[in-house]
Image (tube, rainbow, N blue to C red; front, side, top):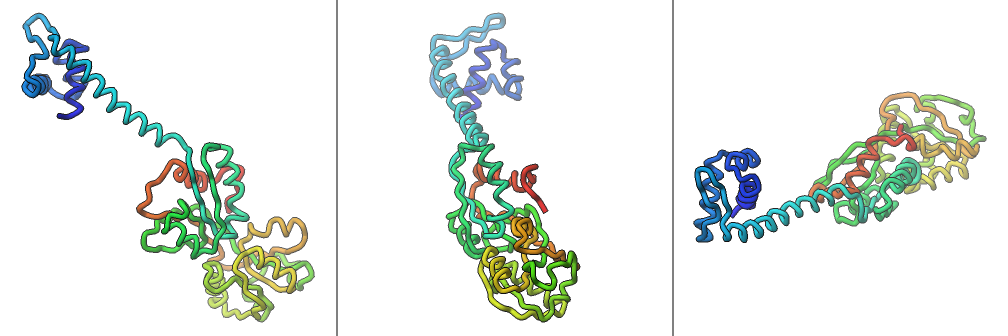
Length: 299
């Protein structure tokens, strides 16, 4: 027995009209009659007294009406509760992010998100890129934030923003006073690198290879904070996301030089496991990251 049949019966009794019950349910008047007759056959009772001028509900019909209303109300209550669950942004949300995004691009978005959705228990894990992918695939994180997002089995990618790569140098370096230069100008210079397996390092290597540049690699680090510190200590150069050195440039501990050329934009994306259901907190976090809140810098 379909829920719709119980609703047809309730509408018929409440309107005392076969034609009106048909209209309310988007069916024909004859279909209403057939459904009522089917109920009576199934339960072996006359529910409606049919007359040319009078419409009446039998005592059995009154009992059936009460039960039918409870069934219809319960069914509609389920739909209402599920709708509320889709609309209420609450519960846990775990985001895994690479260091550069987590320390520099992400914080303003987190501040806005926490203010808008205080019922969400937001946790952020700061990881290497390969660990972000692993956390998402293993459901240790609901969402991941990575640079140069890569197509991987079981991973869904949502592009969000992009930032520009820039050259950095300590204040006493010969290049420190320059505002703009070509990547070819760093040929032969002392250089602080990211570790080889990091996506940003691979992109920088490609840029140097295309330009025919070879640098004197001093040391490699696995995250952006140690790269910046290495540049200061070793009086060397490095290429990093431009936004990541705002604080150091403002403090005068590092200088940022714009690079000329192509392929200098670093794409950033949100990743999630393809088979994972999207919860309201996940949906709202992605929406915020893509929208670019007024309080959050978007390159």
